[in-house]
Image 1: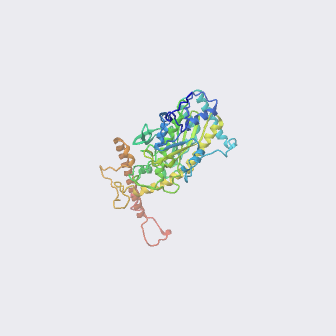
Image 2 (image 1 turned 120 degrees about the horizontal axis):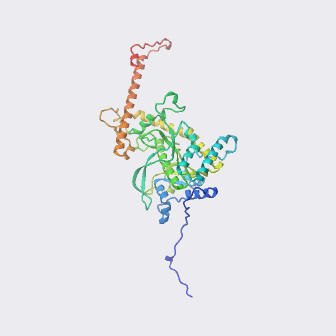
Length: 486
């Protein structure tokens, strides 16, 4: 029998085999085998192949991974395991100092943890009830606010709200997943946004210990509306209520998709990282290329938390330049990257798992209150100083090279101020509203300066300047003629 010789073109060379985990589908009742469920969810949520623009991928891979690859092009990367990410992508952390909460050295059964265990039992009870009755996403979200985030809600220096954020979303090609150069302004509303609280005009009895002028609402708005600053502190853009977010939360019920929760949480956290990056740079016009204020100013981070039914993930995200392994310099890819790493995952249908989550969230709250807030305050004070020096000067020019055009802005009827760069994406009606608010801020600043000048003049009248030495014990105040000015 003659053996037939095959044409080499008939053979297919197998270069690599990639196993893509299917989406985890739950009916809300299958929570008995927690270990298997946890493994399936982790596989589904974390089985991600980073996009390589030089590879020829099949249509099925674009179908399964296209959304994540589009995020890669926009600069959002996710790794399932923190320790593995550090080992395999060590170049992503050059000189970074990140806070990673841990409970490894904590005895969860100690008397000191009794209150947290009590909270954990309540969270477990609600999770089991939600699973048993297959409750909606709202039930899971409401229980997270009360059982997991309750202490943050009660912290006067921190802010927690279902806060919308605005961000430019870069469009990607549906086939290649690369950036097209177009972008749209997008509004998203995470299930919870965690930031720093502000204040404005509080009575003395209502003032919060530790609160100072750095987080005064009107001062933050001056930074927002000034042409040379344009510093966005509130993710809503045209406000200054919840500022400089440090965490975001997105919930999905058992009928949802854990991967979509992770994408949405990371998208919000990436936006908040962008805001912190602007804050950390040297104050100045957005068009100017500036450096970080200090060598450690790039050490900012944002946490992203997601829940898929009773199963939670905690991620930490940081911002950096795109690296070689992320194909830096490739056309169609962003220059900056927000990298996210999973630091914990688990179910809260048992007391130990609920305790772990609550302990980590409490540690994150402590970090936000005692470290992150100080970081923001230091950098924000420099912006306030810059703004005070320039606020009522040269609103009509972006020139920082000299004082030739640095003149005091005058309030002229019918004259409008120029708007900061972030307003370019707004519609005409929104721009008009921003103009009115910016003019009101400028008017208030003039009135404040005028009042300050009058007070200084009054002080000079009461304490006239003299070069001769005067014995303080011999001073008497003559207020006749000046009391009418008070």
